[in-house]
Length: 618
Image (spheres, one colour):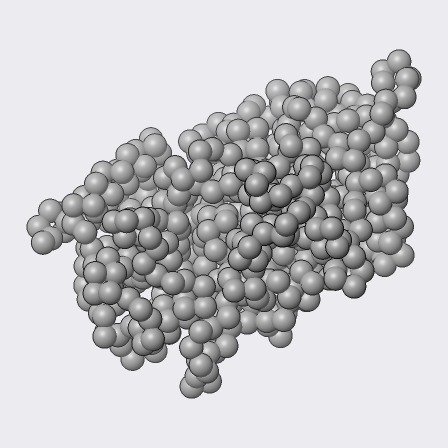
């Protein structure tokens, strides 16, 4: 059976785009999925506590979840994935647009008809012996101005429990699907049936998955299909698949933005409040920034979201944003009481940990949680571990999944229906050289140029050599559901609509190193000193030095009191290296050249201006 597009009468993508509508289409889709995947039974998820407890108990009995000590980690559990299923599979993630050009050069494209045929073959009987859960959910507060509804079918109880944390899931979301309500269908299977073609029983494992993995998106019909993986972004289809890849297409068509951005509320010592959206590639400090504990007195940072933001022009002309998620799916390694005490408090209870180490006392541990490791642990693979083992105890991409409302710094307006007005947008990446501590875009076009040219050193959150430098425009390289150059054009169009109400745009780099390979900026709580400069720029209280790459802070305008920074370190952080930036400009030219004539003209002009200005810059 080939996966359907819901109705033979539905106009094709050339005539109409959009997902299915209404409860009748939902029930028909679930019936089709039952015939295709052949599960033993179907369970419609209601989101209740009793349901959560029942599924949790079943997973504990199956060995898929390990209960943690109820006093040390109340309501929390540990999951261990298959070693072959530990990160996003970018090379197996596809945008199946009707036209290859619509996917663009940064996405993997597959012909939708060919992909449907392959998925039909792989999903056929894939859930035999298992339960198919039907999981209705809302991205954003139910009834919000740009909240969206989706339904995932899955044979993974781990996905059900995680989606309960990460979305508004259950009966209320299902009830919100009226006769004409559009919803996004998301089909997922781990691809490991428990009954063979001949009817023989097959053994189960604590973390079922398949060596073959496919994550496919159909932008015109708003469908998501995921096969073979049980890991985070490959299997929690409400997250990256819906909230970014599919939502970015919806946003482009409807005049808003779906972005890989954290959101925070910042209150200055003078009591003035600003809201900031910030885009960083995965594992580059987003959660630390969203939950920042200021080192300077009088400042207050409140968390709205740590990963994804949906932004829309409001009736007042400003840009408003919501966090469409309801939980945090954070990287555990590197998170500790000194680096992010707020995250540590957030995961104190009711948390699912994945691929971290287990202590003899029934607690969890990972590299960076404490200055010194425990004397003995069980590592993320379930093997005995000591500091002499010579391997990490936790996987570098180990995760914690925690409810957002447990965060001690959660803002009172984090789930308001209309969201919050954005005053500043910040772009950043992990750069050991070249990029200064902070700079400001001269105007909106310059800000889009900044976002389009983010480059970052690769981390363990994605496939590829760790440390390798790659361009990650808007931190959306793995997540934009259409041609990236068209994404930049859409940002330019949004800026044109916002006009003088557009947020100011900044770029930061916490990761600059000196010639001996040492970080020159302390980071973490001291990042409030950079936010202080940004706020004073917003309030026109401080000037800046003009440079070819933007407006730079002057040394006396930054609060550096109490920091043990040498003059050389300050120069490294705040000055522009013309030779390094001339090389950077050549890399940007090559980066832009990938887009085969589709580059927006304002960005091409901005690159030429950068090259011209650098030619004579001393």
